[in-house]
Image 1 (tube, rainbow, N blue to C red):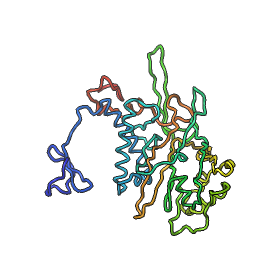
Image 2: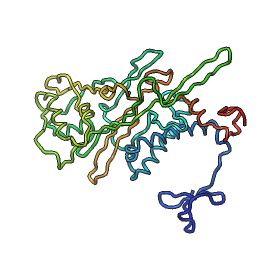
Image 3: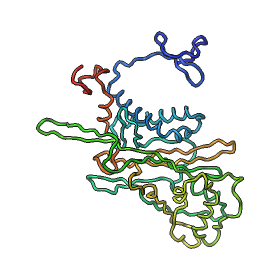
Image 4: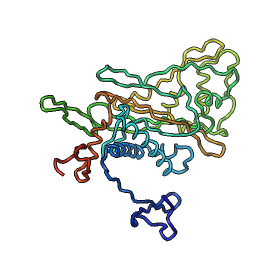
Length: 367
């Protein structure tokens, strides 16, 4: 791959055995490589992974279009998202990993997956790491968010509201905490259904699959800039442990209420038991179930993205991979997306039948 000479600049399309296309810094020329077998098993699995990821990128562009540190445009951020997640899901497809779900060709629903949503140099505090728990039976598992208790020991000093934000959540003035969430519709209504019979005529087995309707949300809490935060809300941890209400008031003092989601703010301010005397150790309950109280929609993937504002106005981020509550063993309350064989089948076509015809099957009973 190389830059095209000046007489080809601005060109697009095929030229002899090459392809011209517009790159970030000018026209690029590369060899036109046609794969010998466009429907080999490895290529089909990678195609399924790529299709699943590009559909996700379309739906989540307001987030992933800015969340990769070092990439300064929406186009480059999206490209990075597709690149890292296609590689990641491609490896999962190779081993048919059960924690992943797949999109069929032509699907326009966002499939929840452990997508890499952001990449940067910030650490993610343990207090901001969600977790799913299996609440169902062995036959029909149901993965749900639950409350996690963290034991927090504050340093023995007087802390400003911004000190507390930095200590608990790793962000300062002008920073932001965002919770990307993929929800899927509960119940029997599905966007698409799939059914197939395997086995022989004597012992047929019917398998079913479905893609649920889905939606994407990203509640956030935004902190005021340093100039917007007034003084006077310091919390003293040097003596008797202050009440958690004092800590909550300090946290709330820094928040830009016009830009913040009240549900996420209530979650971050948390609740706690009585601190251990003068030791300032608090049992802080992070109630993740507050994101999963909708009667019609369930949280199927969730993560936390931290945004820290640098002195020059740019931002740095943490590494965020979505946590998923997928139970791919059997269809149940937490099931969504399709298994790999159904996705595979949707990408096959009689018109593009390859030399793999005797192995891949596909639509149509004749070449």
